[in-house]
Length: 182
Image (cartoon, rainbow, N blue to C red):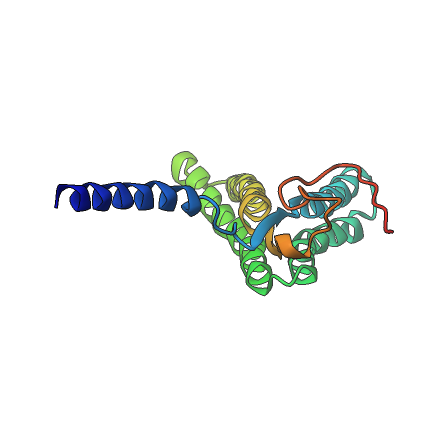
């Protein structure tokens, strides 16, 4: 009886120890996230460059500023759609339009609430506050878009599909890689 109880304890202990070792050997998650926000940053750089060029020239500023604002509004959603992220494209459009308009109104009301925009230059306070608030809204929309929306899930190849010459491909993403086929 004592020998049977001892062997049952040993078998239970061995099962517990072996099960904890095999728990770590489960297959890893099949998807990994890739960040493509650098493409959005290129589009935003072009947009801000066009707006800056339009504001710096003496005459004919409207077409450059309009092209810059159009690039600002549409570059992010187009890039999201190119990556198959329809939800990100919709949110990006809403952020690019809604956030600058909302913060622009808040900025105009804040400046005129503090400074009491009346009299000869009263309208200028609304314009300055609106432009400052709108610019802050544009930057905030860009940060949210690039940091949180510009991510796509890419399927990772299964370990069975990997070549025996490249056993660590699922774990590391090399900067430079050479492959051979025999």
